[in-house]
Image 1 (cartoon, rainbow, N blue to C red):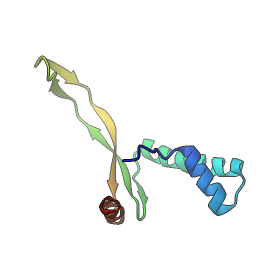
Image 2 (cartoon, rainbow, N blue to C red):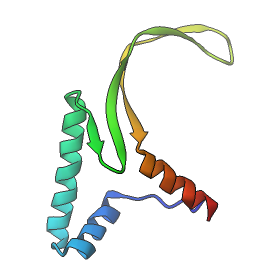
Image 3 (cartoon, helix red, strand yellow):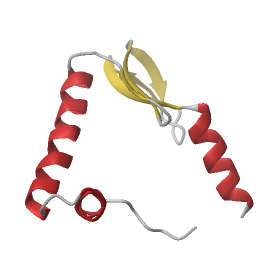
Length: 100
């Protein structure tokens, strides 16, 4: 594992190099796309990126959890969580990368 993390700046630089927009326009484009994705998820919509995967939210109900160290019970409040399901193409691509 290389430990490299893909950042927003990396995406901006890739758009700058491949599309030919200015760096400021590239940064604005990346920010706009991420804002649209975030807004859709906040509104409870699914975000499906063909060939990549599907982001969605799920409501989890309240439950009782346990501290594994002490065994003491603690209430876990209801919450909304983000889920991601990769596409089959993405799964296959990642799996092929593991073989190299």
